[in-house]
Amino acid sequence: MTTQFFPHNNIGYLCTDWQVERGLGAKTALKLIDKDENLFEFSFAQLTDLSNQAANLLSSLGYQKGDRIMLLLSKTVEIYAFFLGALKLGLVSSILFTSIGEDSIVERIKDTDTRAIISTSRMNFRLVKVLQKLDESFRVLLVDEDQSDGQFVGIREQFKRASAEFVTPETDPEQYSHFHFTSGSTGKPKAVQHCHASIIDHLRSFDEVMQVNSDELFWCTADPGWVTGTTYGITAPWALGLTQVQLDANYDPALWMRVIERYKVQILYTAPTVFRMMAQQADTFYQQYDLSSLKRVYTVGEPLDPNLVLWGRRIFHCEIYDTWFQTETGSIMVANYPGLEVRPGSMGKPLSYLEAAILESKDNPLPNNTQGLLCIRKPWNSMFREYVGNPVVYQNKFLGDFYSSGDIAYRDEDGYYWYIGRSDDVINTAGHLVSPFEIESAVMEVPHVLDCAVVGLPDDLLYEKVVAFVVHDEQSPSLRKLDMGIKLYVAKKVASLASPKEVVFTDKIPKTKSGKVMRRVLKKQYLGQDVGDLSTMEE
Image 1 (cartoon, rainbow, N blue to C red):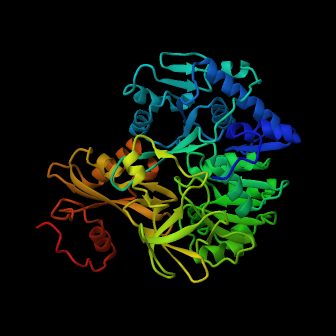
Image 2: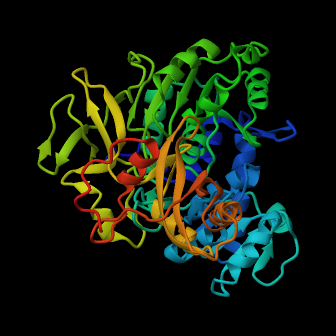
Image 3: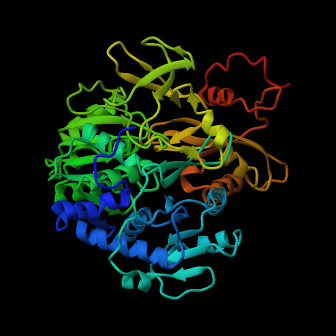
């Protein structure tokens, strides 16, 4: 592990107080734009005060080092204040997607022994149902309310009155900092735990890949519930003293172009899915805007098709760089970046301080141009430290001295890596990994469903779309109603992004003689391809 090169290990401190100490207190840290295009600016000094107030408030409410909390907030200043304040206090926090379903919230809380959620009253309709399934000691802290009612605690006025003076305690680099959730192919979402030492690789990767100058404006469009939105939308840019844009609004190509034009965004980090949505607009649409400020555009989340690289160059008149990393890796591992020739369609090369390999098994590295598991030699600073409560699953992610990503790729003779697909059944939809098992479990709870299987299938917009194959009983309502009921139930129970884009009604789900769903058969049948050997399928 690399040793620290700054005066404090605490991520919250490095993003705020340290910047003030470096003389950047008056510099704008955040340009926050709401859905009505109102601009709210916060300096590093203000961000320091707000995060200190959040730390003091959380401390006054009895939360102590090591306690877990969650944040269910949109991109308002409170999400940044409380995330950084929790880090300063030594809490271990997780930012949730605002579209997450009620049962998913409950599962995540129970699996990680989380003590509180920080949210707003507009989420109460969902959180009331969540509280019904939790211990009475659990609290919902509402940043937009003053009154308290049972387990709902209004903290707006307390937050305003809290002291802006806070001394961040000495922080061990291995102290837990924040966690995210990822889905497996055959189980519930797992909590991926990171520690304060991860900031070292947040900064190193940002420096090596983004190469942003101190006076340039950076915009990472990712939701902070995603590892990209935390690492490159909160910690890395602020620990480097950069000004960043954040937009609290749904995707709208005209709004995005106005933001780039009006504020002269220079570095943009987004997802290939966004590019695919953008590409639905005619080239003339983009000619309405002055996008000349853009110097570089980066993408992450799923493979960036070569045609999108060419499209991006044509529209934005700058280079487009794809990057690869995972929730478990915590920061970029393989990337295209300035100074490295871009080969459209390639993931790029491993960063200078990392070692990647293509392995078949623990002791069997594969030669160039041979497909195998993409692996990274451990350890590195931003590597996850555990799957909370799942030590066996954690150990199974390693092949000897290498972390196994579960992605299939190959390395060419020049050291570039090329993505092929997943080695498991995890579905990558719009840059989010979702578990077919989790969706299937929800679908099976819908009345009149007898059996189901969920797969990811190619999609021009989402990269992969969620498709549910469903067997129904004879008493089921119209298929149209059942189709809608399944989609709505999954959105409510799991998350809107996990809801099937398509429901295919079938008489039987193909399974092996041991009862395992044959997803490859479903995929090939759907795509009209040869299903191959069926000798293991049940009669």
